[in-house]
Amino acid sequence: MAEKDLRYNLIYLINKYVPENEIKPFYELISRDDIPVKGILADFNKVKARTVEKIDGDLISDIYFHFC
Image (cartoon, rainbow, N blue to C red; front, side, top):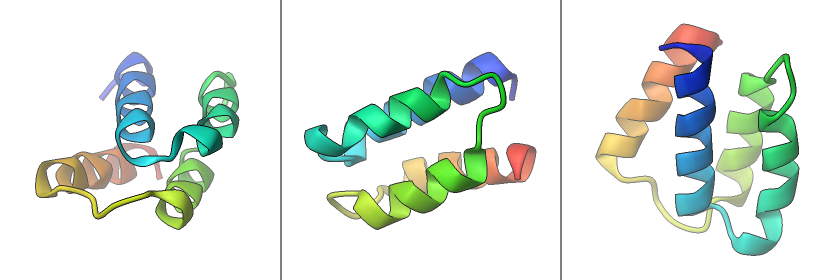
């Protein structure tokens, strides 16, 4: 997974699971040169509005594998 794919996938997950009023800080972190993936995923788990679907859980596992 390339960095471009990482950004795309994180934005996809944020848009799908995070409440609208919580999204802005995630975008700021994703736009950094050194994306703090572990922190983003930890915060994502705290604020997600619903249970993550299996396919998206697999995507999160893939992100962890490549970037954490």
